[in-house]
Length: 240
Image 1 (cartoon, rainbow, N blue to C red):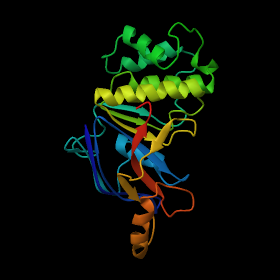
Image 2 (cartoon, rainbow, N blue to C red):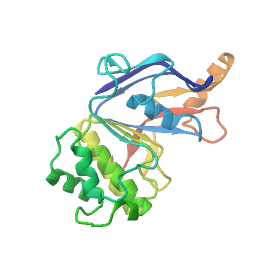
Image 3 (cartoon, rainbow, N blue to C red):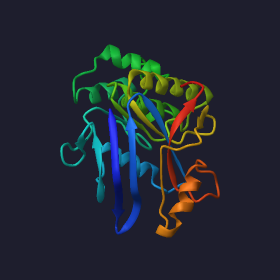
C-alpha cells in the first residue's frame, strides 16, 4: 500500500479546512497524526478514506487517484469518532452483518477478532448496553477484521483503561508487521507512544511570507505555543 498526496486542499463553505498537503506514505509503517483541536486531523482521515474529495490537488493510492480511478480504497479499515452499530444486536452479530457485505470473513475469525480487542463473542449484551470502552473496542474490531491494507484510526484509545491501551498498541504493531499502512490520530497521554522529532510532513494555514518560520516550527512536533497546525510523524513506540 502506498499513498501519495499532492497539494491537496479542501474548502467547506469557502473556508479552508486543509491546505496544500503533500506527503508520501508507505505500507508496513505506522504514522501518527498530531495537532491542535480543529486543525483538520479527522478531516484528513476522511480524505484518505475517500469520504470527502479534495477541492484541489490529488490523493493517489497504489497509482490510482481517489475520486477518479476509484471511489474508495479497496481494502480499508476505518475507525472514526463515536462508532455506530445496530443498538439491539450483540457485538458478534454486528460484525457478522458487516462481514456479509463482502463475505470474506468467517464466524471463527470474527470471534478471534473480538477476543483480540478484549471482548467476548459469547457476551449476550446488546451494543446499546455496552460501556464506552466496549463500544470503542468493537469499533476497532470492525476496522481490523478484514485485515485491510489501509488502516485509519481516529483516537483509538479513547475511553480505554491502561490495559486496553496496551492491548490496542499491540494490535497496531501486529497490523504494521502484517504490512498494513496505519495512520493513527493522536492517542491519549497514557499510550506509550512517542513522536519522532522530524515529521514526515507538515502543513499550516499561514500567510505565504510566514512559511519559512512555519517549516522550522514543524520540526518541533506540535508543542503548545508553536505555529504548527498539523503534523504527520513516523511513530515510535516501545510496543511497536
